[in-house]
Length: 154
Image (cartoon, rainbow, N blue to C red; front, side):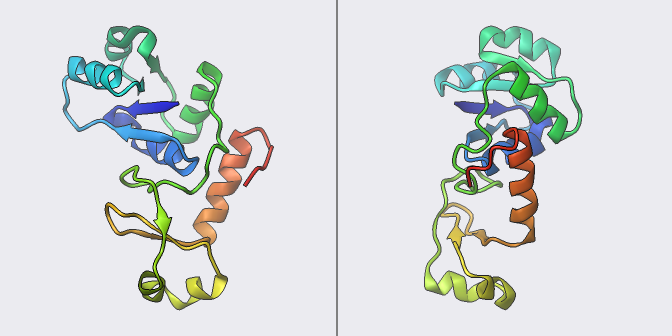
């Protein structure tokens, strides 16, 4: 499942990306008809907190009422089937690009403590951000496990 999150759902988009979902983030200020057209053209489910935008999107949209990302994720899971253990930590949480294995040069730029933990080490080919299994990944993995209903698959 591919998602398009409106500009109010930045944190939800990052959570979906952490789970491995293709979650595009709408450009700020984009008009509602353009968002619906983008969702249609890219075969995405439009996620929004905006009642009018959800109505315009019809079956292609889901309106979320919760304000916090965790609550939005739970609400989304009640609305549509979301696999929170789809492909964890395979997408850049910032720009949605698929991550690749980090090169030795990139690993050398990581903090020594991160290097000592071992991998996997990944890099974003779009923005250059580096990823390693540190404390943030552990917290995010626990969150994804909770959203998946406790069925740990990563």
